[in-house]
Each structure stands twice: as C-alpha cells, then as structure tokens.
Length: 165
Image: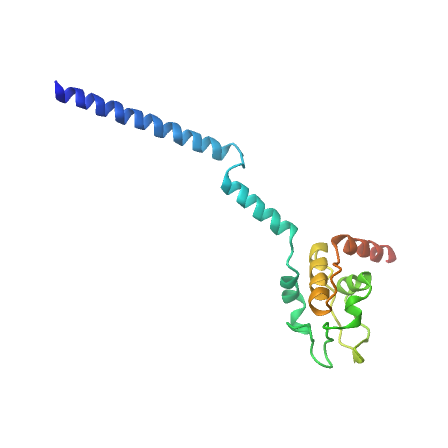
C-alpha cells in the first residue's frame, strides 16, 4: 500500500511537470510567432539593423572607392593623383565637392601649386548617405574641417545637376 501511494505521488509530480513544460513551450512558441519584437534579442537585432541603415562609415567608403588613388593618408601620388590633405579645395564649396564625386573630373586641377591631369571617374552610383559620409570623412580627417556634408546637401546637388541636363 505504501508503494502504491509513492507511485501515485511520482505520477502526479511527473504529470504536473509535463503539463508545466508543455505550457511553457506554448508560451515560448506563441511569443516567437506573434511578431512581438519586445524580446531582448529582437530589440537588439532591430536596433543594430537600424543603426546600420542610418550610419554609413565614411572611412569604409573612402577605403573602398578613394584610397587606391588618394592613398590611406590622403596624400595622393605625387604628380599623378592630387593630395586631399590640407588641400584648399577640400574645405571649400560643399556643392562643388559633391559634384566632383557625382560627375568625376576630366579637366586639369591645381592642388597646392601642382597641376594634375589624370581623370577621376564619376561615382554617381554611390548613395546620398555614402557621398555625405565619405566627403565628411575626407574634410574632417584631411582638411580638419568640422562642418559635415549632409544627405540634404548631396540631394540638393543631384537635383541641381539633373536640372542642368
């Protein structure tokens, strides 16, 4: 009789545990499939995704699209590709800089008293964010200009260039 009572207690305990685990599993599954993004993991993922969408790394754009000619330090290649470092035109008119990125450059340019004739290819395929980021990076790091170039600056220049055509 004593043995029968123990088995019944164990059965109730196992049964209760099973019911609890099944209920817990349903709660977890319901939370995952409901589209509820309030879990810590979902919050972390959505924040990092939106941060990637908002922030474009100007240095990475520079390394990918500009560094081959202008070099990592922005000093260019003497008598072939102009320096960006302490070049007066880098800190000048924002629209002109954006226009150079979008249209490239085919005419001679004089930088710090040295004439350069090599062509700079256009990079109109870059997004407004990428152009703003790379030009801000160049101005900040090579010309010590703190005034950023914004997406609005780039968009305004694109509109002006399209209306000229």
